[in-house]
Length: 533
Image 1 (cartoon, one colour):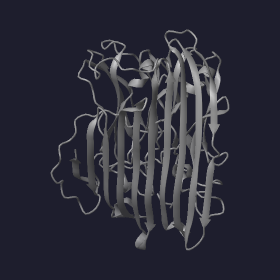
Image 2: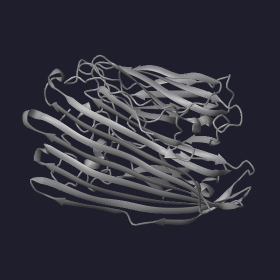
Image 3: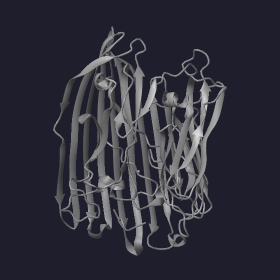
Image 4: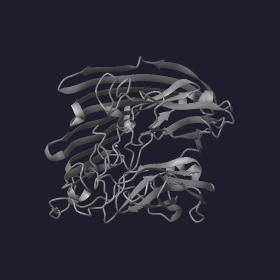
């Protein structure tokens, strides 16, 4: 797309900003400074208990040399916590592209992030993340690796300066917010794509931080077209992508990747200077429930775990997909046996229809379905887990010769139901309905004025049931919208850029109440910050 021209609603809620008065009058164009990056998403709620903070690392990234350090657990907050919060603070000034980064503790990926693009005068930003589920890793001294690959030269002057910390909140009292968090017993990583689990694993989840990035066409995978169509990004099978996980060569999980837009995306960095796109600064991992395979994985032998992205042209790079494995053990058994009792894979669907013309058009429809069911013989009896997941993608891509008009309207659905039966209790199930949406148009008009109008959506409805009774639910509705115009192919001070961007983040459900916040910016000036509950 204009490639020659220089992206689980389980969060608890904290305090929200009061409805704001009308904001300041924005400048007629972007200047040399603008509001620091912000988001309408809720902050991580912290318990009111003793806390201990540990610095994981501080570094200035000028190249692709990773920061190497070590981590030691805090001494004054015990080794069982009600919550653990990761915070990344960053600052940069000058000129720089968006950069992708990661943070590993003991080899476990605890954060995948990208960076906002700086103003000449400089910006600061922060990312907070609930990382309590990695408590097993944090109980031991560990190696730390952090990297935000960067290029600094006479043109790209921005040195990325970051500090990462962990804050541990002691478990005190019986209140659900301050008692010890229920976390996995083990957090594992792969060794040359090989996994060995404890022999008494009774529940296993895999996390995959899948990102298409690196500046090539896979950063814009949703815009790729078959070879016969005249467009700058080619892919033999078109734009359909699916992240698959296999156990010993057998398909164990499928998922739709989120169409992340980084902070330089869609040929228009002015869209993202203040409000990043959903998930851009905090990449959420795809979760796969591998419990149906626990009986196979529990044999004490190494098993091959492979992650791949369907649709990527053979030999083409551009995707990263590190894996964490979360394991819950049966402490009443030394060995948990079991087996796979059902594996039903639907026929993959991936069709594209190319229609040539003064405005080219590509219609895409893809999807897949997989159901896996297995059992484990626990100390409480036999437990059977069935995971059914269905994917569906539709999109319409329109463009002109030379790509002076480039437009996409797409939707990705990822529906999953996990059903657990046995262990002397009623059937329990969780239903998740995820929908990702993108509707954008970029045009290059008279005087090389480049305009991008874009809306992104991240929605999820999740419900839990005991028997037929609904016992909990959450609903997430996160929408970004932006409209930005600038003069292309000229020095920065001649771009005459203008942009209106906004974001609304709505979250509601059992034990949550209502969170509903919207923000709006004009030329990088915050003009609205409002709550709606």
